[in-house]
Image (cartoon, rainbow, N blue to C red; front, side, top):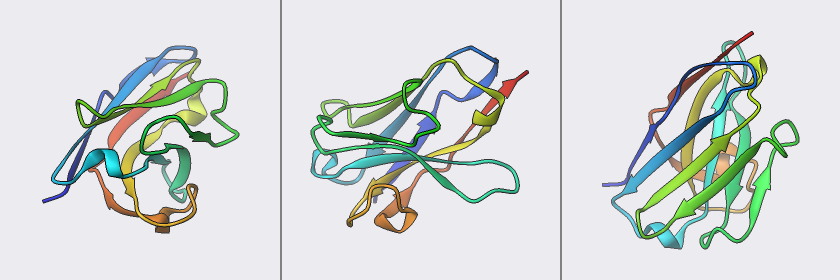
Length: 123
């Protein structure tokens, strides 16, 4: 069965850093682009970052560009999100997902989602 398990979330101060991990299993990991989304309280789930099967092509929301870096290790079946210079507005539950159709920024382009990991940035 397909499984995605996020980890690495926590509580940090403004300006701090966190590295999220998403461990994948149950499918041929290197055949799929992967993405990160987040959902803050009372808000819609929004696109954060995504990357191609090889990791060569990356895509970022304007709000995180220059601060976050998405990467993957196909040998470990893991996708990462390095988050630097964190801001209170980054506070959200972060989800990784498997991409299966066109449109990197659309939630409908992804078919499997992890359980999420909480990121809280204090001011």
